[in-house]
Every structure is written in structure tokens, then in C-alpha cells.
Amino acid sequence: MTTTTGTPVEATGPDEEPHPQEAPRGAGAPRPGDPFDQDDLPTSPGATGALLRSLLAPHRRGVWLTVVALLLQQGAVQSGPLLVAYAIDSAVPAFRDHAYGPLVAVGIGFLLTACLSAVFQYAYIRLSARVSQDVLLDLRGRIFRQAQALSVDFHDRYTSGRVISRATTDVESLRELLSEGLQELVNVILASLYITVMLLWLDLGIGSVAAASFVPLYVLIRLYRQRAARAYEERSSAIAAVIVKFVETMNGIRPVRAFRREQANDADFGRLNHRHERSNGTAMLEMARYVVGSRVLANTAVAGMVLWGAYRVAGGTLALGVLAAAVLFVRRLYDPIDRLAMFLNAYESAAASLKKIAGLLEQVPSVPEPAQPRELPERTAAVRDPGGELPGRDVEFRDVSFGYRTGGEVLPRFDLRLPAGQTVAVVGSTGAGKSTLAKLLARFYDPSHGQVLLDGVDLRELSTAALRRGVVMVTQEAFLFSGTVAENIAIGRPESSREEIERAAKAIGAHDFIAALPDGYDTDVRKRGGRISAGQRQLVAFARALLADPAVLILDEATSSLDIPGERAVQRAMRTVLHGRTAVVIAHRLSTVEIADRVLVMEHGAIVEDGAPAELIDGSGVFAELHRAWRDSVD
Ligand SMILES: Nc1ncnc2c1ncn2[C@@H]1O[C@H](COP(=O)(O)OP(=O)(O)OP(=O)(O)O)[C@@H](O)[C@H]1O
Ligand SMILES: [Mg+2]
Image 1 (cartoon, rainbow, N blue to C red):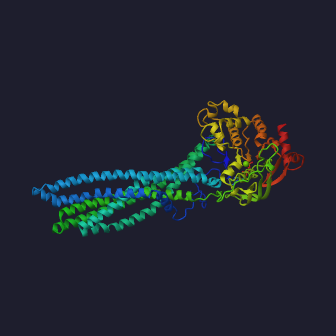
Image 2 (image 1 turned 90 degrees about the vertical axis):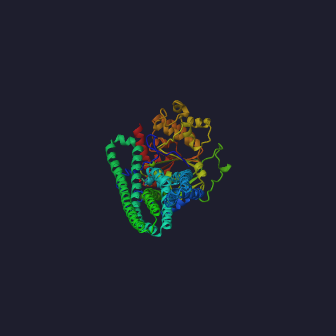
Image 3 (image 1 turned 45 degrees about the vertical axis):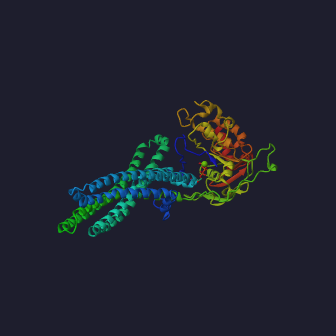
């Protein structure tokens, strides 16, 4: 379905449909119990792991090659101490006896391992970069597709700021893990394993001391992870709240200026910013504690080993070279464990982010695409009007009731039939449910009960393409996408020729102002000179709808920004635009009603009057009253 909803006033930012119940949000105090306000969508257990696996699945070969490259690189690096042991215990004594071979071999060995380690490091960086870039590309794409696929009611509550946060800061923390953290982890595991084996092989006693020191280290890591996980989740929520506030303020920069909200906003933003700072501080503190703990452990272990080793060297039960190699190894052992903090840091941060992303990706659209989509039936010649044009399609609300997720029932049960080709005006007081009725017909939402049918086919069963051709809704906030005016008009039918675009613009009286723009139809609407007024935007939205040529056209306050001559012009055009289709026109200005075949009056979600305009005006109901008041005001 093509729609032209969007930001109020000027089309500058992402779409955040203004909503009466959604007033200032993100101001700091989340309502307990509402998962949306706490930024955490319910995530099923194991969803994060499943997401990670599904991301890595297409790169199995790449992941293995990366691990192999790292293994080889570590092998090359870790052979250093062995060469030292060999040099001290064999090569140097041999050198004394004028046998130069062994020492030269040690030199060449050093050179070789250095070269090999560089080559494998290079291979590792290349391979891992490719995998992680692909994974991130995939993930960002999934977030975008999911955000687009999720229904309007999801966006009503989740807000675009949070989606942006998921796609930026959360993806970024995964990037950090993949690009830096992962290498650290593999390095640490490999190095510790390798070194422990080497130590055990060199000397069982000293090796056992090193291995035993892993137990308290393991406990320390577990403690750190538990605490850090909480801190990072809070940090991810906090940064999302900061972005939400940012997006909301920038989207509403005009009302912010108009109501001098700057100071209040500053204070709100400061609070959110502080919350982020605090959570960041907690995370850093946990990290600092871990680093200190692991250092103390490491140095205690090294000191123990050196003392015990020296004692044994003195007693003659340990060769000096072995002790030297062991000390070198042990130092190397704790060096990566220190760096493990970096990995754990990146890991916890990424895990918290991934959990939030997984929660978003797990959401199921409340307005899902049909499993077995149906097409609309072909209209037979018999039902064509005399002019041979397609007279729109039959619309039926059958035993429909509806309420938004966040509120009570808005539309109590009702039945309504709009025969093909009819132009129906819907009037009624603010909040009566007119837009809600229109949104059900455009399938922004599915009814809580009953069916909305187009030529007898439930909207829920219609294929996306059939729905797009079938129903188009033009709203008050005519949204323009970045691009040229022509592209904006052609959105509902991108294959249109320039001639068709201009014809549509002429038909609704938009051609003159477009032609007067700096580059005419090729004017970029976001660039200087491309700025067009709210009324002009509505004209563009009209042209867009006309070109999309739907069977059912819904106009929700679509002429509200036009001046009287502009509206008159559009009304004249409307006869052409609405001819040959079913039309639902919602308008507060009753002048629009003149072109209608039928008027529906809504109060509190119910249709209280239904009839031809003349009939209702002559009666004594709500519409007659409204019409009299309106006549008096224009006379
Ligand atoms: N997204 C939403 N979530 C929750 N409640 C909503 C939502 N949109 C509208 N409502 C509520 O539904 C009721 C009907 O709203 P609706 O927008 O249909 O009124 P309307 O007749 O179009 O009013 P107006 O003439 O002001 O446009 C109102 O009480 C409104 O608060
Ligand atoms: Mg409305």
C-alpha cells in the first residue's frame, strides 16, 4: 500500500506520527510494567545465541580459516621461550665449545618465527575483517527490514529513536567485539592452553602451579560477567533513551522553538545523559575491579613460581634455562589474561546489545502478510460503468470492532458497506474515530473482531501488491522523501513516465508551482530552493495518489493545509480524481462534502447518521446542525 503519511509541518525528519496519547516521552521516568518504556522487548531465552549462530552460519568456512590462521600465528609466537630455553641450556654451552651451528640455528629460528607470525597475523586480519563486515552488513539489513515490516502499532510505541539506537550503537558494539574482542579471546585461550602445556612439559611441578591458579581466576571472571552484564544492559538502554530524546527534539524542533522548550529539554536531556554516564561508570568500575583482581592473582602466581623454581635450581633439581623459560612463559601467560578484560568488556557490551537486537528481530508484525495471498477478482464488463472505467471496488466492514493496543475500544461493533464508485464523506468531532476507520481500511491495523473486505476479499488475505493497487491513503502530513519532486509524485507508480507525472500534477493544480521551482520537477525537495510549503506538499501528495490510481482512495484531512482558492481548485480536480473509484473523504471543512454521494457522521466511534448530503441537511440531525453552523460561518 502506498501512503503519504509523515511528519507534521515541514518534511525534514524521520516519520514520527504525532499521537495524542504519546505526548512527551523519554523524559526519564519509565512507567513500570510497560516493556516499551523500559526499552526491553521480551526476548525469549536462547534468542541471542540463535541470532549469533544464524549470523555466522553462512560464514562457517571463513570462521574456521580465521581460527586456523590464529592458531598458526600463536604457534609461531609462542615458540620464542622454547628457543630461549634451548639457547641457554644447549646452544650457549655448545658455543663455548666452538660449535656455532646451534646458536646460528636459534637466530634463524627467531627470524623465521617472527616472519611466520607476521604472515599469519596478516591472514587473520584479512579473513576476520571479511567475516565481521559481512555479519554487520547482514545484521543492519535485518534490523532495517524488520523495522519496516513491523506494523504501525509497534512503531506507535517503540519510537524511531530506539530503532536507530539498535541499528547504530548496538550494531557498533558487536563490531567492536568482532574486530577486536574476538582476537583477544582466541589469543587468550590459545596462549593459555599452549603455555600451560609447555610449562607442564618443561616441568610438571611449575606447570601445575600455573594451571591451579586458573581456578580463582575463573571465579573472578564469573563474578565480573554477572555484574558487567547488568551494567551493559543498563548502558544500552540509557544510550537508546539519549537517542530517542535527540530524535524527538529534532523532529519537533519547530514546536520546541515555538514553546521555548529549549531549557526544559536541556534539563531532560541532561538527566538522560547522566543516566548514560552513570551506567558507563558502573561498567568501567566493574572492569577496573576485574583488572585489579586478575593482576593480584597473576603476580601472586608468578612470585610463587619464581621462588619455588629458584629454590629448586639452588637444590640442583631444575635447570636454570628451564626456570628462565618458565618465568618467560608465566609472564606471557598472565599478559593475555590481563587482556582478557578487554575481551570480556567487548563481549558483555555486545551481548547486551545483541539481546536487544534479538528482541527487536523476534517481534512478529501484528498486521502480518498472508501465508497464501489472494488477488482481487477481475472486474467483469457488466459492472463497468458506462464510460468503461473501473468503478472502484466494494468495501465492506463486517461486524468490525477495534481498539488500539494501548487503549480501550475505539470503534464498537458496526457494519458498513460502501458500494464501488461511491464517494463517501466522513465527518464528526475530533477523536470520533474517523482516522481509525480509515486506517482499518488501509490495513495499518487489523480489526480486533470482524473483517474488512474489498470486493469480498478479507484485507488480511490480500497480497501486498493487490493491497497497494487497491487502497491508497493520503493524510494531512503529506510526507516527502528525499529526492526530486518528480520522484516523490511517482512513488506509487515508479515506472511512470515524466509525461504521466506532469499530467497528474496538472490535474490537481500542482503544475504551476512545481514549474516555478528552481529545477522544476527535478528540484530536490531537501536542498535549498526545494523547500515547499505545507499546502504545496499536500498537492504533491494528491498528485502521487492520483498517479498511483488505486481502486479505493482515502483522503484524511488531505486538504487541511490548502488556502480557500487552493482547496477550491483541488475540489474541482477531485471530481476527476475520485471519478471511477471508491473514495472516503474525511474533512472538517464541510465544503469538501459537496462532492460526496453520501455522508457518514461519527460520534464516539459509532456511525450516527448515514445518508445523501441533501437528505441529511434537510433533516434535523447532527449533520444538519453542523452544516447550518458552517453555512453561517462562511456567509
Ligand atoms: N495510535 C493510537 N493508539 C492509541 N489510541 C489512539 C491511536 N490513534 C488514535 N487513538 C485514539 O482513538 C480515538 C479516535 O481517534 P481518531 O484519530 O480515529 O479520531 P478522528 O476522528 O480522526 O479525530 P480528528 O478529527 O481529530 O482527526 C481517540 O480517542 C484517540 O485518542
Ligand atoms: Mg483524524
